[in-house]
Image (cartoon, rainbow, N blue to C red; front, top):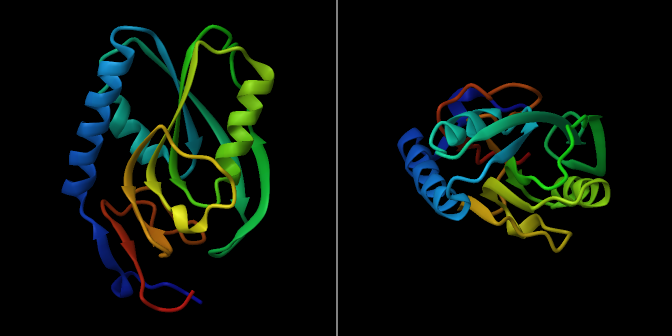
Length: 179
């Protein structure tokens, strides 16, 4: 199945996304106060969200980037998480904020949380996802912070892709066509 831009329907507008990011940032600013945070962005999908989010965070902050994947080509998770690049600095004693685009099966989130918990003794580890797709969850992972719940739609835009395309949309959209 191929998705065409003209087939997309808007699920969340740019304005809705930016308003939600402001709300999440307020919550995080209150939680962390002025403590240092290391934000770990899961590439490539979360980059748009992470950049907009950290611009509204007021605490001292460092950014790190990792690449994980549980998708091959297309729209269905392979069920296996591949660590494409997971090199991180010493996170011992640090506040870690993982920033992800979507939690659906929860496999990527579980893999990353297990990796951090098995390799570091952080001061705190929080998980933030723009989208929470509980209907697809196969693990008991729940994000500490999330922007929107979504139902069983394959979404693109604002960093989320279909075979590498549509990441550059300013909104999050979906297609009614069977995928």
